[in-house]
Length: 349
View 1 (cartoon, one colour):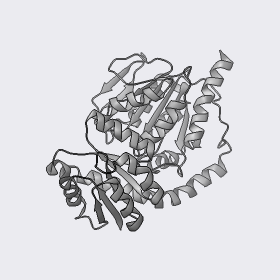
View 2: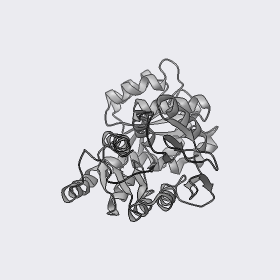
View 3: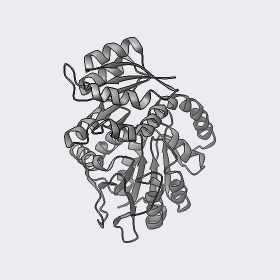
View 4: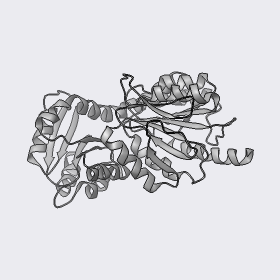
């Protein structure tokens, strides 16, 4: 049984979330709170599995409460509930930096909330079930690490890499906000990112990353030519590919996940061949696993996030199960790999 605490200063919002979840036999709402201070006290007492957390609240807002909630219950997963305004999006990204595990946008009314209830239930269960999945997934990871001597912390590509593709979903923004700002200004290759995110979030997400980074980070534009040292974030809800003339295009292809990591990876494998690299980070589902195979078949380098560090390990696990992943790395080790590209490029040129 998944125990949920609902935190929102709006009685209407609390009622909407309650209605959304109460008919699910696997979910039990253990309480509600109308501000951050009350939420902290109830988290200490009720020990919920999931906290849905509003940001703008009186007495104590969600951003101030979030670190205290995590301190009071380290196993609690926090889903931020915010508006689609620019301020709401920026606050959501700040919440991800502070430890939020997922976010949902706050619909305008109860009817809109009920329209997305299945998606929200799925995200809640995925976050909780990820604990059990990590236990079984770690056995797979240990087996692979034992059988593959390339699983080392000091990794350098054995050939020239000209593009990096990254695919992520639940928990991805938090990882990307630790990786991208660590890159130096002279980072030598472009990075293209397919982050499963609502279309109204990706522009603000890219701008947020750009402010914190030495490299340029931007939401990719149709027909834009790829440049070294620039990070391109796909528009949410749209499929981005890189074509043979090294430009970005959005394509009208129906896929289960949008933006699709599989499509993006396949396109960079077709365009850059063995000079491509693909990284699958945390998330639900199997997006990226087919694309990883394409990159590997083209002679490129393939990486999956360490299953222990992933907020939800399903996506990297599915990639690993293809047998085409070269390295299983923590976010810190992924940063080391990316930094090694700078050293390799300087040594060769």
